[in-house]
Image 1 (cartoon, rainbow, N blue to C red):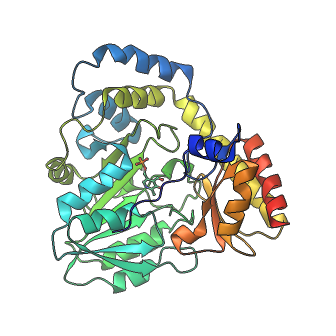
Image 2: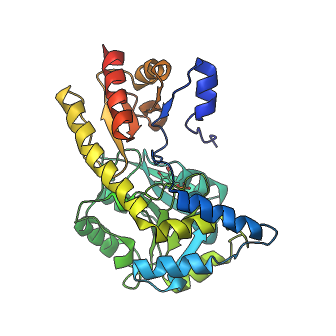
Length: 351
Ligand SMILES: Cc1ncc(COP(=O)(O)O)c(C=O)c1O
């Protein structure tokens, strides 16, 4: 197994390069600071830190379920969507099973599959898109699970509802399909399928979402699984009893109640992704239409080189070589000022 290569932490880059200002556009995080109310709520909860958290996140679950129009028994919370990925793998994959994974994609699916002793079967993207037809063609008697990421990371694209419905119709009944919707809140394409629509029509579909992206809570780690209640019961068997800590639950709840923060953040990102994509295109740099908080940008040369040139200018991006697409970079969208600074730095780097 290959270890996960995280984006460089800000302190490390600042120390290495002797910079005081560094803008990290490498891990698809929220560029805004959390509202004061959320921080106050976390501090208030500090009085409860001598107690274990509610292992079932009941209050958070009720608030979220009512917003999603679901019952609480359709939800299970995890220490970020990453833990949710591990839980689904542990619940469904055994030695000798196969799990199909598009490639390149968020690498947690492959790791979770291997950790359970199952075999990852990788299916290349077509261009920038997940190739549902080729995935169907790879199904064997050993296939237990299919990992899908919609919108996809790193390419930022979505498949549509029609294609997904066709895919499900052709799939054997015993195969679980994971729809990782970590970037769900940034989707503006009306034809994009969403987990809520499938839960009671097709209990093979398991959705994953997170508070790390639109809600800006990556540091506290809250993600959740959406599935049919009977499926949730199976996954709950492998969950650690107190996997989401007190502060994380309190912060996620406060952010749901203070929904203007996430709303404003998503509006900013959707506005900026159009503006930045347009500005890049004017300079001959193309990126597939993004439904996320990042852009996957094709360069005239090496992404590694551009990554190295941008770093001393105070900008960290993700080089495409990590995803096997070395003439690309993945760029998280920042605030207007950060994006302007990035565009200028990129221009200098390319020249
Ligand atoms: C597709 C996808 N799923 C899951 C995650 C992990 O989310 P979390 O921070 O909730 O673990 C990420 C993070 O970048 C992601 O891109």
